[in-house]
Each structure stands twice: as structure tokens, then as C-alpha cells.
Amino acid sequence: FASLVLIINLAAMLSRKQEDIENITDALLPMLFWCGLICGLIGLTNISTALLLFATCMLVMFIGRVPVKYLMMLVMVGLVAGTLVFQFGVRGATAVSRMNDFYEEMTVGKEPPFQAKHALIAVASGGITGKGPGNSDQRNILPHPYSDFIYAIVIEEYGLIGGIVVLVLYLIFLHRGMKAAYHSDRAFGGLLSAGLSFDLVCQALINMGVVVHLGPITGQPLPFISWGGTAMIFSGISAGIILSV
Image (cartoon, rainbow, N blue to C red; front, side, top):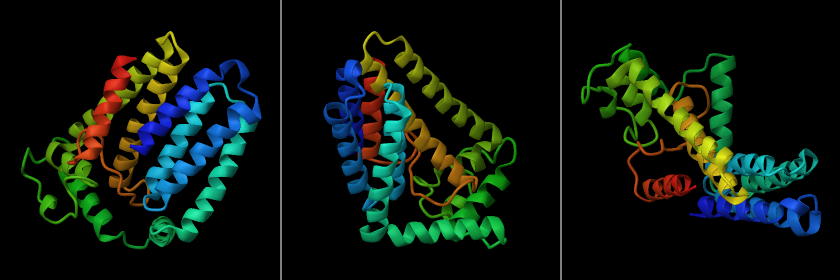
């Protein structure tokens, strides 16, 4: 809920301040304050979601014609908030451990953790066409095969072809969202469509990247595919807003 509201609020503030976008006191400081506060609070318990939301805010502000020199101010706010998150957050030590493990896997050949190892096994055993729907072996071994690592099961059951189809569908979703932003008659609608599209698709790309071992484990679900309650509801709300634009 906080992620959705921050993107909506940021788009609204940018659209109102388009004629006075370089006014630090009235336009930029409120945006920097809310971005830093909300991302910092989310980061206390979920660092990957906070980083994704922070990147989305950067993109929305860039599209909203905020000068690059002021975007650097947002980066500084993010660094300060990130330092506090790693120091006081409940998941700071876990995040550092996962990044260190991934670095050692890439540099010195350390064996991947259990989840990443069995996700790779699922991807490798899927082949080109997969084992068929419901024939996954790793779903009985891999932790959270219905949420964090569902993409590994998709590839195992539907193969490389199924994995590519899912990826292409997300890219089409991003294209349509950005096209809606480009053709929007109002700055608010365009910024909102771009921000929500980017947020959903980047979340999907992070999930898929983790499964194929392009990054450390994050715990991000796959939008519209992973099993979920509130995540599915707010993904649907975001898609509805993009459609309304």
C-alpha cells in the first residue's frame, strides 16, 4: 500500500510543479522527504522492495523533468536512509550475508545456497519444451515454489519456451504502460502509468534474475503469477490504474 501511494503522490506532486520544478523548497524537498521516509521505513523489514521503490521514484522524477543534479540529491538521501536501514533494520545482516555469498559464488566458485542450487536444477532439467504441466520434481524440494521461486517451476514444466513467453509478456506490459504514458494528455496520468509499469515489471525481472542466478536471493514475488493475497490485490489495482490512463 505504501509503495502504491508513494508513486501516486510523487506523480501528483511532479504534475503540479512542472512549471516550477527547480524550486528546491516548494517542489523538490517534499519529494525527497517522502521518498526517503517511505523507502527507509519499508527497508527496515524488506530491503529489496525498498530499493525497487527507490529506483521507481528515480525514474518517475527523471521523466518528470527533474534535473540530474537534483536527482543526485535523491541518491544522497537514499544513501543516508540505506545506511540507517543496514544499521537498524531487522534484515540488514541477512542482506549483507546474501550479497557476500553471491559475490563469493561469482568470484571463488562457492556453492550456491540451497534455494539457488535447486532453482538452477529446475531450470536445467526443464530443457527446451519442459516436463509438462504438473510434472515438476523440484516443487517438492524447492522452498516457496509457489511464490519466490515460481519462475523456476514455470521453466521446469514449460521449458525455455515457457520462460521466454513469460518474459516477453512482461516486456509487452511495460511497453503498453510506457505507451499509455507517452500518449497521456495530462502529466499526472503519464507519470503514474510509467511509474507503476516500471515498478511491476522491474519486480518481475528481479524475481526472474534471481531464479537464473543473475543476482542474490531477494524474496521478491513474480507479479500476477506468484501465489499471494495483498500482493495480488495491489498488482491488480496498479494494472487498473494504468488501464484508466
